[in-house]
Amino acid sequence: MALSARVPSGAVTAGFVKEVWSKRFLDAVESSLVVAKLVDRSWEDDLVRERGDKVNVGITNNVTATEVVVGTAGAALNPLTGTKLQIVLNEWWEANIDIDAMTWRQGHINLQTVAEKRGAYAVSKKLDSTLCARFSALNGSAALGTDGVAWNVDTIDEAVETLDKNDVPRENRAWIINPSGKRDLRSIERFSNKNYDPAKMSFGLVGDIDGTPVFMTNNLTAATTGAYACLLHEEAIALVINPSVEVVVMDGDFFKDKHLVRVRAEALWGSLEMRDTYGVSVLTRSK
Image (tube, rainbow, N blue to C red; front, top):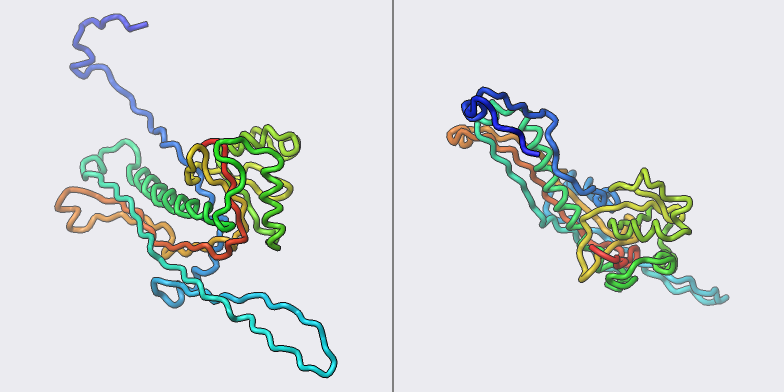
């Protein structure tokens, strides 16, 4: 129901009725950033010590034992026939937010905090999405499940079996799914009865599948109908960030002359599939 007219009629327009703005501003809805925490970050220290734009990683291969033959010298085995891998730092992204000096001074909320958070989130989301884009190439690009079809027990067991057959350690494995995958898991009695508490169904860690943690994100790469979820060991993908997502407030002469303050979030990183058999993508029911 509309309010009745005011008397005198110009009270609001003339500025005699105060407007109150809440200091508890509503933030934008954030997707959970989880993938960068679940991959191999161990190579970053090498870059920090040595500098440079590439990290070369030596690769060894397995050797096969041979039966002992008395009187015959055993053949020498070579575990160093692998081809080195190279993590190239070729992803450089930024998010700049400019605020004019007047608004910076007069804003009723801390605009620097808002700009820093929004900028850092934008760069972090891009980083997470870059890693998700690598899921579909794992396991020789042979994704499990059917695009647009709900998961069932066989879908889950086939993914686990795939990694088990490849001798992938059970420690440091993780499922990375989206909301449709979460819903499908809740409909499977084997998992919903003990592992999934509806009160904990949010982004980030949402439960476990037979002891392997399950994380949910909205940053998965889209297929046709669904998206590429993943079961992976942390060594499947490497990530090197130099530096971590950095937020800088810039108010030097250039910006002062324009009566602006710039808040810039920036990160430089590289990622690479390191062990193809240490992960497998699983198609989801919907994006």
